[in-house]
Length: 90
Image 1 (spheres, rainbow, N blue to C red):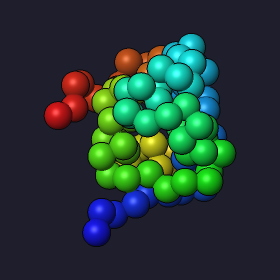
Image 2 (image 1 turned 180 degrees about the vertical axis):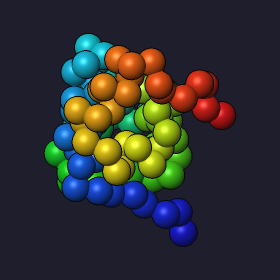
Image 3 (image 1 turned 90 degrees about the vertical axis):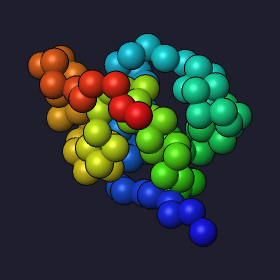
C-alpha cells in the first residue's frame, strides 16, 4: 500500500506556489499525469498526495518534499526568491 501525504499547509502551498510560478492548473496536472479536476482536488485539500506526486511537485518547484508539507507558502516563496531551493531532485 502506497503511503499518502497531507498537511494543513499543503493545499495553500500548492495554490500559492503555482500562482507564484504562473502555472495554470492544467500544466501542473500534466506534470503529475492527472486530470485538472484531480489536481484541483489536491489544491482544495480533498485528496491526499501520493509519495510519487509529492516527489513530482518537489521537482517542479525545486523544493525539498518535506518543505511542501511543513513550511508556510510565504516561507517557501521566500526560499525560492533567496535562491535556496534544492538542485534537481531525482
